[in-house]
Image 1 (tube, rainbow, N blue to C red):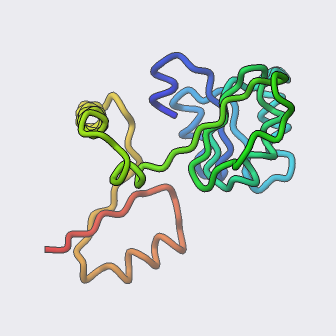
Image 2 (image 1 turned 90 degrees about the horizontal axis):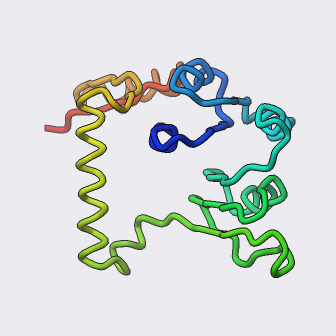
Length: 168
Protein backbone atom coordinates (compact mmCIF):
# COMPACT_ATOMS: atom_id res chain seq x y z
CA UNK A 1 0.00 0.00 0.00
CA UNK A 2 2.76 2.39 0.87
CA UNK A 3 4.36 1.90 -2.54
CA UNK A 4 1.07 2.63 -4.30
CA UNK A 5 0.50 5.71 -2.14
CA UNK A 6 4.00 6.96 -2.94
CA UNK A 7 3.06 6.79 -6.63
CA UNK A 8 -0.04 8.90 -6.02
CA UNK A 9 -2.62 6.11 -6.13
CA UNK A 10 -5.87 6.36 -4.21
CA UNK A 11 -5.85 3.28 -1.97
CA UNK A 12 -8.72 1.50 -0.22
CA UNK A 13 -8.25 -1.53 2.03
CA UNK A 14 -10.12 -4.26 3.83
CA UNK A 15 -8.34 -5.19 7.05
CA UNK A 16 -8.84 -6.11 10.66
CA UNK A 17 -10.06 -3.10 12.67
CA UNK A 18 -6.82 -3.09 14.66
CA UNK A 19 -5.06 -1.89 11.47
CA UNK A 20 -7.55 0.82 10.47
CA UNK A 21 -5.93 3.70 12.36
CA UNK A 22 -2.49 2.97 10.91
CA UNK A 23 -3.90 2.58 7.38
CA UNK A 24 -5.64 5.95 7.62
CA UNK A 25 -2.50 7.48 9.09
CA UNK A 26 -0.39 6.46 6.07
CA UNK A 27 -2.97 7.87 3.64
CA UNK A 28 -5.41 5.08 2.78
CA UNK A 29 -8.65 6.79 1.70
CA UNK A 30 -11.09 4.16 2.93
CA UNK A 31 -10.92 1.11 5.17
CA UNK A 32 -13.41 -1.63 5.98
CA UNK A 33 -13.42 -4.64 8.29
CA UNK A 34 -12.93 -7.71 6.09
CA UNK A 35 -15.24 -9.69 8.41
CA UNK A 36 -18.13 -7.33 7.73
CA UNK A 37 -20.34 -8.84 4.99
CA UNK A 38 -20.73 -5.31 3.56
CA UNK A 39 -16.99 -4.54 3.40
CA UNK A 40 -16.98 -4.12 -0.38
CA UNK A 41 -19.98 -1.75 -0.31
CA UNK A 42 -18.21 0.27 2.40
CA UNK A 43 -15.12 0.66 0.22
CA UNK A 44 -17.19 1.46 -2.87
CA UNK A 45 -18.97 4.21 -0.92
CA UNK A 46 -15.60 5.57 0.22
CA UNK A 47 -14.63 5.69 -3.47
CA UNK A 48 -17.73 7.72 -4.32
CA UNK A 49 -19.40 4.64 -5.85
CA UNK A 50 -16.90 4.79 -8.71
CA UNK A 51 -15.40 1.54 -9.97
CA UNK A 52 -11.88 0.67 -8.86
CA UNK A 53 -8.98 0.86 -11.32
CA UNK A 54 -7.21 -2.08 -9.72
CA UNK A 55 -7.74 -4.68 -7.03
CA UNK A 56 -5.11 -6.81 -5.32
CA UNK A 57 -6.75 -9.88 -3.80
CA UNK A 58 -4.88 -11.78 -1.07
CA UNK A 59 -7.62 -14.30 -0.27
CA UNK A 60 -8.45 -16.69 -3.12
CA UNK A 61 -9.13 -16.95 -6.82
CA UNK A 62 -12.83 -17.36 -6.03
CA UNK A 63 -12.94 -14.09 -4.12
CA UNK A 64 -10.91 -12.33 -6.81
CA UNK A 65 -13.35 -13.49 -9.47
CA UNK A 66 -16.29 -12.27 -7.38
CA UNK A 67 -14.67 -8.81 -7.20
CA UNK A 68 -14.38 -8.36 -10.98
CA UNK A 69 -17.69 -6.42 -11.20
CA UNK A 70 -16.18 -3.79 -8.85
CA UNK A 71 -13.51 -2.99 -11.45
CA UNK A 72 -14.02 -0.32 -14.03
CA UNK A 73 -13.38 -0.54 -17.74
CA UNK A 74 -9.80 -1.65 -18.38
CA UNK A 75 -9.31 -2.44 -14.68
CA UNK A 76 -6.60 -4.70 -13.32
CA UNK A 77 -7.13 -7.71 -11.03
CA UNK A 78 -4.04 -9.01 -9.25
CA UNK A 79 -4.35 -12.36 -7.48
CA UNK A 80 -1.76 -13.56 -4.98
CA UNK A 81 -3.33 -16.80 -3.69
CA UNK A 82 -4.66 -18.74 -6.63
CA UNK A 83 -5.44 -17.45 -10.08
CA UNK A 84 -8.55 -16.80 -12.12
CA UNK A 85 -8.25 -19.53 -14.79
CA UNK A 86 -10.13 -17.58 -17.45
CA UNK A 87 -11.85 -14.23 -17.68
CA UNK A 88 -15.54 -14.94 -16.97
CA UNK A 89 -16.68 -11.70 -18.62
CA UNK A 90 -17.53 -11.49 -22.32
CA UNK A 91 -14.65 -10.63 -24.64
CA UNK A 92 -14.31 -6.97 -25.64
CA UNK A 93 -16.61 -5.80 -22.85
CA UNK A 94 -14.89 -4.67 -19.64
CA UNK A 95 -11.38 -5.40 -20.95
CA UNK A 96 -10.07 -6.38 -17.53
CA UNK A 97 -6.46 -7.47 -17.22
CA UNK A 98 -5.86 -10.49 -14.99
CA UNK A 99 -2.48 -10.70 -13.27
CA UNK A 100 -1.11 -13.42 -11.01
CA UNK A 101 1.68 -12.98 -8.50
CA UNK A 102 3.80 -16.07 -7.97
CA UNK A 103 7.25 -15.00 -6.86
CA UNK A 104 8.15 -18.64 -6.23
CA UNK A 105 7.77 -19.31 -9.95
CA UNK A 106 10.63 -16.91 -10.60
CA UNK A 107 13.02 -19.62 -9.39
CA UNK A 108 12.11 -21.79 -12.37
CA UNK A 109 11.05 -19.26 -14.98
CA UNK A 110 12.74 -15.94 -14.18
CA UNK A 111 15.71 -14.71 -16.18
CA UNK A 112 18.93 -13.42 -14.65
CA UNK A 113 17.90 -9.90 -15.67
CA UNK A 114 14.52 -10.28 -13.93
CA UNK A 115 16.24 -11.60 -10.79
CA UNK A 116 18.61 -8.65 -10.86
CA UNK A 117 15.71 -6.18 -11.06
CA UNK A 118 13.86 -7.95 -8.23
CA UNK A 119 16.94 -7.90 -5.99
CA UNK A 120 17.60 -4.22 -6.81
CA UNK A 121 13.99 -3.37 -5.94
CA UNK A 122 14.34 -5.25 -2.65
CA UNK A 123 17.56 -3.42 -1.81
CA UNK A 124 15.87 -0.08 -2.58
CA UNK A 125 12.94 -0.99 -0.33
CA UNK A 126 15.32 -1.94 2.49
CA UNK A 127 16.91 1.49 2.12
CA UNK A 128 13.48 3.13 2.30
CA UNK A 129 12.69 1.14 5.45
CA UNK A 130 16.03 2.06 7.05
CA UNK A 131 15.51 5.76 6.29
CA UNK A 132 11.94 5.72 7.60
CA UNK A 133 10.51 6.53 4.17
CA UNK A 134 8.51 3.29 4.40
CA UNK A 135 6.78 2.72 7.73
CA UNK A 136 7.42 -0.58 9.46
CA UNK A 137 5.08 -2.30 11.89
CA UNK A 138 6.39 -2.70 15.44
CA UNK A 139 9.08 -5.38 15.63
CA UNK A 140 9.32 -7.88 18.48
CA UNK A 141 12.74 -9.53 18.61
CA UNK A 142 13.39 -12.61 20.69
CA UNK A 143 15.66 -15.61 21.05
CA UNK A 144 14.77 -19.01 19.62
CA UNK A 145 14.18 -20.36 23.13
CA UNK A 146 11.36 -17.83 23.54
CA UNK A 147 9.58 -19.00 20.37
CA UNK A 148 6.66 -20.74 22.17
CA UNK A 149 6.01 -17.61 24.25
CA UNK A 150 6.24 -15.36 21.18
CA UNK A 151 3.87 -17.60 19.22
CA UNK A 152 1.37 -17.53 22.07
CA UNK A 153 1.62 -13.73 22.23
CA UNK A 154 1.06 -13.51 18.48
CA UNK A 155 -2.02 -15.77 18.66
CA UNK A 156 -3.45 -14.05 21.74
CA UNK A 157 -2.83 -10.40 20.91
CA UNK A 158 -2.19 -10.17 17.17
CA UNK A 159 -1.60 -6.42 17.18
CA UNK A 160 0.08 -6.19 13.80
CA UNK A 161 3.53 -6.70 15.24
CA UNK A 162 6.16 -8.58 13.26
CA UNK A 163 8.11 -11.18 15.19
CA UNK A 164 11.78 -11.84 14.52
CA UNK A 165 13.54 -14.76 16.19
CA UNK A 166 17.31 -15.15 16.54
CA UNK A 167 18.29 -18.71 15.64
CA UNK A 168 22.02 -18.52 16.32
